[in-house]
Image (cartoon, rainbow, N blue to C red; front, side, top):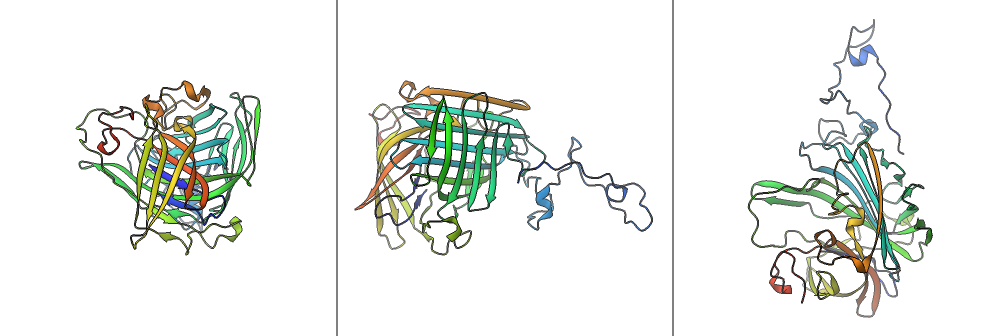
Length: 403
């Protein structure tokens, strides 16, 4: 469970946190660089190492002094097939009218780049999905009509979904209102085997632009549409589900982050990549009231715990539910890291009330929530996915509902 509280509204003090795109051309066939007999005055170099498919791995990033291993930047440090590098965003109206989610990730050891865009509004959710063979150049974040442009790193970026056969389009600009906050490294093992090893950072911000779907248009105004940018990379379960092996008998908390961040009225006022005013807290606690017949929260209380032991208790009231399968999470056919061909596009929509609340693919959700702390009021997002027994909340089986 992760809460992202944007802190908009009267008396808000700031967000609280719980829990150029050009493909490189072929290198010139210079004998002095690529091998063969050098000309007079030239120095002979060994030919660069190639992958099994004969593809060079140099990219535009290799012209920057940013290397962390002897490998080129595009070469993952791990050979694990589940290596990934992901963009994830959400945006939501301050009155809960709509929510949209955006995701895009490259899986270099799988050779895949995929993405998704989805909006929920007026009781319906509409989703765009796309996948392609991964480009040779890691800065190329384009999948058919979809692209992400990082116009000012850690401050501004643009997400464009050009007109396409699904009828879902967007042109959106994200402006950061906080510096980035790096979560603690998230490492999970099953026995001796590494299952997840991830670095993640997030930023709060505002959105401006427009969204079109089903013949309708939504004006996205920075005055009322907040959101979160989330970047993560490393290793996590992807693609085809694995089967077999011993199961864990009990769940337990394996990661928690809590902090309070200063907010700024313009990305140009951000002091640096990470804010010297960031305040890390000792931890966080939660208490959830579930909607009967589901594993979806109706209300929740999040307590941010100071190092002194003092608590900031924030009451959350659910306003709108977004199914994360709209951007690929647990989707039965558009799941992350699945090979769909050289380029594939898809679109779908559904009535929210028609969904089975206990279907496996519908369990990963984000809910727009009204947040209250004393006299202060704001808006944010509560993310949930819950499987297995939990005595505290009365769950006894893998996916039995709240009573």
